[in-house]
Image (cartoon, rainbow over all chains, first blue to last red; front, side):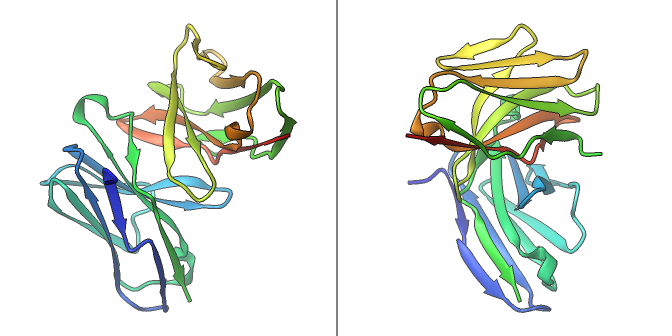
Length: 113
Length: 108
């Protein structure tokens, strides 16, 4: 079984809809991250969490919110999806002692029409 | 200016070739440096860390030049399985900053 899982793997939605992307991990890591990847722009950090009670904005948090429901779960919400949020979204985790080694989930492909 | 800049490629090379990728970073306070590999439509995975003294892992050699704010990755004796996108990554302020990646395609 994969250590970091993301659901759904693919999603098509319409402008204005609220959607949630979920991430779960069995690695026991404290730190979790949400990134989006766009062609030519690389991975950009949306939000990150160093533990259940610690949530921080990343480089591009506008239009997104997150919830760290438990150490193992970190969900990303788009309150009102817009077409420029079409992207590949990755969740990642890292251990507290070695935060530069991040373990990524398989990604969620989101298309906003 | 992007914080981490890479030539996006693609680099098309024959099997057995030696290929080098370069990366520059803008913030001199960057703390640590890495190369990640990303296969098509897959998640990124850590390839290797990069140290000032240079480090080697099999056919892969990474170098860091802090004075020039420059990182390199050399792949010797390229294999078909090396085809992927290579992401230059720096750690700054407790977060990782990713370059856009350099695409490598190794042909038979």
